[in-house]
Amino acid sequence: MDAHRTGAGDAVGPVDSSRVPRFAGAATFARLPRLDEVAAAQIKIVGVPFDAGVSYRPGARFGVYRDVLGMPVEEAYEGDGDARVAILDAGRATLEIANRAQVEMIDRVETDGATSPRLRVALEVEDADGVTERLVAGGAELVASPRETPWRSLNSRLEAPGDLQITVFAELDKG
Image (cartoon, rainbow, N blue to C red; front, side, top):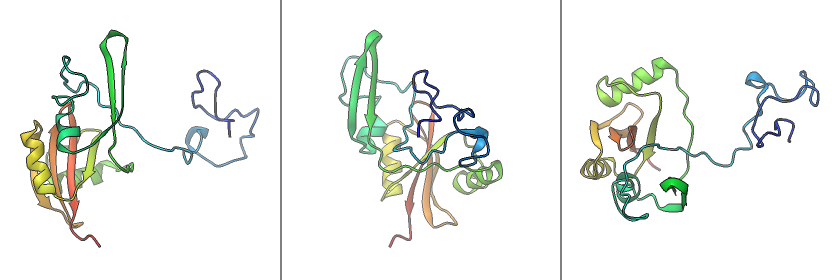
């Protein structure tokens, strides 16, 4: 289905009404294409400190994400002007969209009221207590220690390198 492609750099845009009538097809916000064709999601963290003197070895830029959380490097690239990127495998991802009231309720449960930024990444782990301790030892700042939630998970909240707030959680009722 290429009716939603604008042609300029293959960017996604509204469906061309001269090719697909406005009354036809799936109803979507702003007539944008449905995203059931998305194969994966990527989160980019800009400004994570790193060791400029080493290439893709342990250092501050990978400290929390690769070395503590165990996210393996899938790909790494270098470009002009010392441009570098590493793509870490973070497992399966979902996108959680919540209204302000829900976010405030989660903040009260997880942090005694500390507020969430617009973007917070939640990572499911087997041992929330142990991972939280290792993240703090690896340079993350503890916002709230692990606590049981009403939905039966053990959650902690941290500020990770790159100004990214993360929730670490372990499901208590696995099975």
